[in-house]
Length: 201
Image (cartoon, helix red, strand yellow):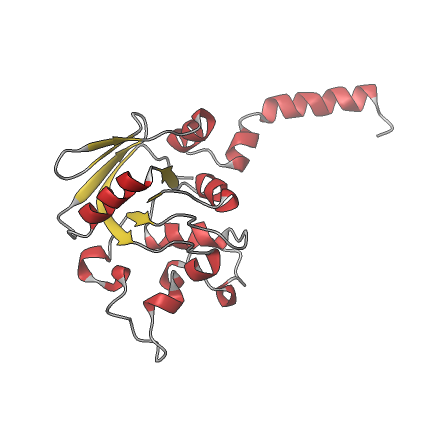
């Protein structure tokens, strides 16, 4: 998993509440177990018209936001089913950070496991960042995970809270597999001891 330290990029405004995982990546795209290739279908039903062409009114289709790495969203982002394909699709598109007043719990935790930083801020602060993001590609934001700060293009800073263990995992690029492998010597020693103490197992 790629480390997350400091990110400076364009923030796309998505002022919608209750964006569920089926909106993020519709069910027909869940057949794959690969983490790559889902970005083209991110927000598929909002992003494309019935004839398959791009919806010019959708934020990520606008020239200023095609390379957005930060998403400013409404409350309860990522609700619905627990599909891990949702953070996969966001990451494959290029989104590394989502800022919202609240997230669905499973989606929130899945983000950390896939190298995405979900940040919870009070509604009034999200509204302020939303207005900043609406300025387009010139209004780039910097997210500093180590110092837990978001800085706007105008130099205004917002502090955010994060669980210390989740922060450590993102800073070091540790997913569940990497965390397990970091303990491989202890696991091997346990298995050896078990084999001696309980050879019948």
